[in-house]
Amino acid sequence: MNERIRADFPILKDIIYMDSAATSLTPEPVLEAVLSYYREYNANVGRGVHRLSQVVSQKYQNAHRKVAEFIGAKEGEVIFTKNTTEAINMVAYGLRWAKGDEIVTTLLEHHSNFLPWLRLKEKGVSLKIVKPSKSGIFDISDFEQAIGDRTRLVAVTHVSNVLGTISPIKEIAAICKENNTLFLVDGAQSVPHIPINVKELGCDFLAFSGHKMLGPTGTGVLWMRDPDGLEPTFFGGGMIETVSRDDYTLTGGYERFEAGTPHIAGGIGLGRAVDYLNEVGMAKIRVHEESLAKILLEGLQGIDKVQVYGSTNLSERIGVVSFTINGLHPHEVALMLDEASDILVRSGHHCCMPLMHYLGLEDGTVRASLYLYNTEEEVDTFLEMVEGVAKVV
Image 1 (cartoon, rainbow, N blue to C red):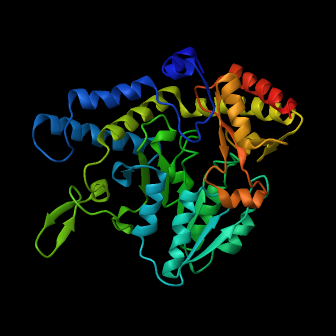
Image 2 (cartoon, rainbow, N blue to C red; image 1 turned 90 degrees about the vertical axis):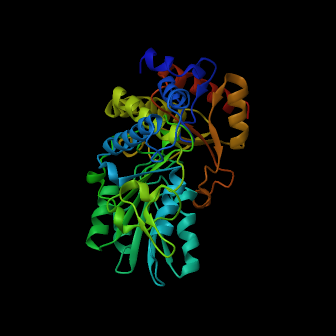
Image 3 (tube, rainbow, N blue to C red; image 1 turned 135 degrees about the vertical axis):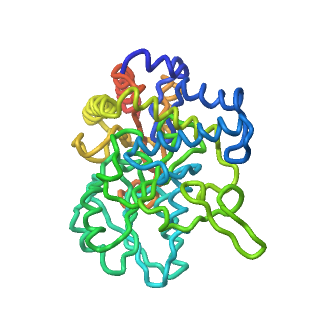
């Protein structure tokens, strides 16, 4: 990526940031969009007829439209949440469950796409867990065996936040369709990095976070194929047509799921982040990250005492790479990289304890995750420093 993009992230003057899987950096145009709301038209949405309320309501609605178009959806199908976690929980508590219902999920899941389903056991809902290979690749026949007549919902991550591996979403969707089963996809790690079209994915729900795709923190999205198929989980101002002493009627569109004053500036900022990604081009971002991931993977595999996890096939993964160094705790490695060369990476369990237990990694891994603002020179520096750390053990 060119220097113009780098210039939009002044924080990069002092650090090498390789923790975008946790949260991405925020470019200047997105910050300007957020500040413009507070400086120029600070008002509530859908709460008045005065000029500022009209301006902000239109901009907030436009942000929904931009995000919907970004994933190939219609405007009314997209709900703004505060993160992927909230979006998934809205599905977990917005569907009406019956004792004996079954949910199928996997061992690759982030806790946010695991705990809500685990908790539904209290309502008599059973949980089936599909295991990947040790490199994070699924055998589609395992889903064919797991999904049956009792399966109400299948919930699968599109891309592992630990191994970077890509799940066979379209194939799983086809099995769900055959069994008349709802399908939720956790797109937190895919939507920021891979061109996405919900119609092509074939899922019923797609959840993702704004803060992982250049947007502000506290922003997320839930897309639903059928908005009428889910009950709102929050009730209050802004989500009703009428209220009497004894009853109420809900409003239509996304508003019925966004009770109360939303994160207005965040939503507008997320819309600008989508503009930014479109300006650069998602296909271009994918190619850029793939080239960096190739250098990163090959470099790590060539360093003594370094163990890399996940598939080495670039067509099966994105630029999220987990590794360990024999004899060192992952936190030690992360601290040494930070203190020695201002390289920022994630270390630990990455909110995926079941997967870590499955892989036999009780202390977790070191994770380097790339994005559009990373460069080949940064990857080279990273590899040089990892090699240096490995030699001191």
